Image (cartoon, rainbow over all chains, first blue to last red; front, side):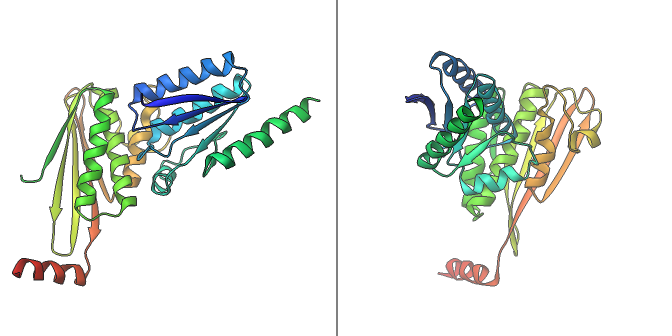
Length: 124
Length: 148
């Protein structure tokens, strides 16, 4: 399987194991949108360290995953963008808001903890 | 031509081997890991352009050997509908067919040379080149290897 989606408390961790076809990227988006709803997820982490190339389609798909998750009540953090992949992504002049990125899983979990606690305070 | 790699493109699944071949070839030509990624990303964009707009086509990658530089020539060819307004297609903000138009301007910024030859109802050929300059030391080492 190209992507494994694991549950970690209120978070979902999608771990990409190999280069993905466009169809697999779209399937990941749909799977995450569905699972965010069924598990009352507050945060989504997508590990992209295995991706050697993130082109404009994949970048925009990651963004649309983040926007979809947000509409379903969850924040999204991208983990492990390779340095050369980051260099390439800059050339696309894409607006990637509201995507957030961290270097590793620990930072991603800490960021989600902050984001979801902040959200709870706002509501209270 | 020797060392040439041809990748037929007929569906989005063909982008995966196209990216992999691009990286292998770029690394064999001595491109840095970052440049190999830029090349693979540009090829991914033009290959997707073929899938989305023409349905099928091919990508031909050819190594270029010059005395003071090595390069990779990439030709992406299809017999699809062609591009009516090339300026708009490679300018920023073009959003043909589901907003995939960002691909070509992105690809253009990732390579050193970029040109489009297109004719409505005949097809489109995108030609890209990426260069790597070779210094004196590298040339001398190679000369010595050849003599040995």
